[in-house]
Image (tube, rainbow, N blue to C red):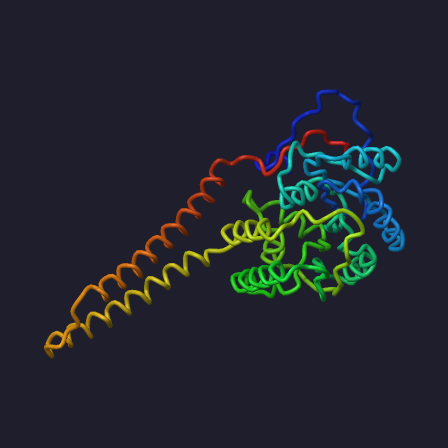
Length: 329
């Protein structure tokens, strides 16, 4: 978006002559890549095969998120062979959310599909997504019916996160994925949102528009390995919860209110026992109360510190991503 401080571009050290700008296609498919050299060519071929079935003009917007292998080189060779493939390389690994934002900024189509590049988001679903868009829906969500081969810890953490985010967003996130088709009006609305710490699924829900769902089963990875560990998923979930919701702060406030009621009740009971002459002696009750109150205070301070850190990151107003070389011209 012109003039948006959340986006930045670093010119290439070699001044290549700009390519002629082709007419905007009907569809753009945004594919974030990070160390996917085993799958890059296979993914592009599979996506193009399914897009050809839609009869629409299209482009593939490939965002290399600071890959350390040969992914970028493969994407650049594919771009030279097919003008419909456009490549944007980020200067380092900024994360999936930033890569998707870079893809949305580069996409020119009347509708934009965002999907993973590891083929776990099946390209075979693309005609169905496009069909729902042509039927009048402005947002088409691909919803997981089965999650594929995931560890129990990963499944439990994902279920907890989706439950929490669904509650704060007033929508269901069960089976939610980043595999979506967005009409141009929805894309433009998302690009106008100023926050730099972004939660794509939540923001898509927040902007509204006419929405429908298309179910799919998560496919196994054809090659390579997932970049998401349980620890990485936990950090990603915490980051998005802080960015999109004040739920932890409300939880601290609620805990404080219940503690106040408990303390008041305990005080009344202690006074009653004292007036009866059989008050408890010793430090057991005092120590227990100190531990409870100390734990609540430290937890509350910790939650506030996390939000202060998130606010600090936003106030620095650094770009969400930086482009090293934009091959999409």
